Length: 323
Image 1: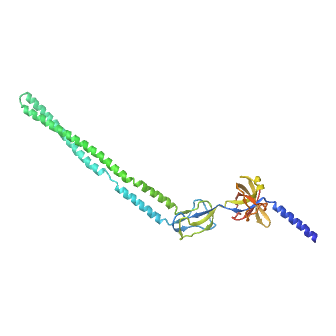
Image 2: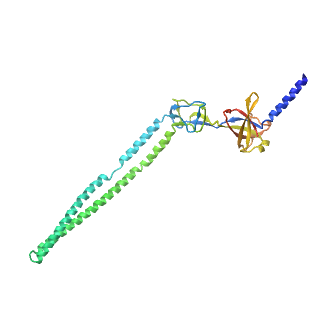
Image 3: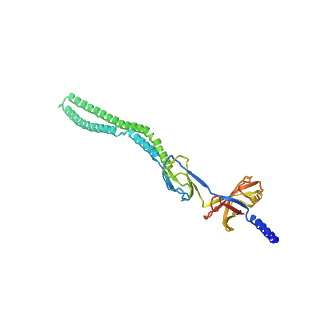
């Protein structure tokens, strides 16, 4: 009987020793968890969210009441309308001046016609004087009449130039006034763009594709900036964090493919491929919560392995690694 017990003990020790050598390091699975917080203050109008729910990146799941921000936007729009109403139009003044130009142009035409008649009359009088049929005074009067009309035409044309200058000056003055008023419009318009950006913060969206781990707020509750709404993690690729001793360090490198061993129940083991993507550059004391191949090691190096999740892996699950 004692012989059988001795044989079983030796077999058990041999099995334990083999089991200890079936892996090079152990660790637990982690996931990159993201805490989604409120970006605006207000009541949550709707929140279509459940723990365990899978979300796509940028998927909208809820909305925070945007009423206060919308009121601010309406106020800024009203300010812009008021600015636009302050602008002046040169058209009424220009229409008055153009009417005066039309009148003055008609006057010039009449004077030019009078001048032509006066010139013909002067020429007729000059012929009569040459034949002694008219007096020299009559010729002088005719020449005087021509000079008067010419002066009237010159004055009318000068007035036309003044009116044209007044139109140009009016346009320039109104333009300067409007530029000063409209200079206030551009920064006000920028406020609308800022408010539109603020309104985006009222939308509750998922920053990544992943599964909702924890929900902190519900529809109807009041959210404040920075207050957690839900926690999400991408579980498609899990991270197995392990610790290795200094003598194991030369055996691994970034990008190396490794075997990840998992307990599948009933003494069976499940194997998944993994890739080392990070190795700590500094040693640290062995954490009490982890195991290494040499548990007596005082200093270890942390390493992280990406493992594609086939649906079996869970956060906090233990896993062994074979380099």
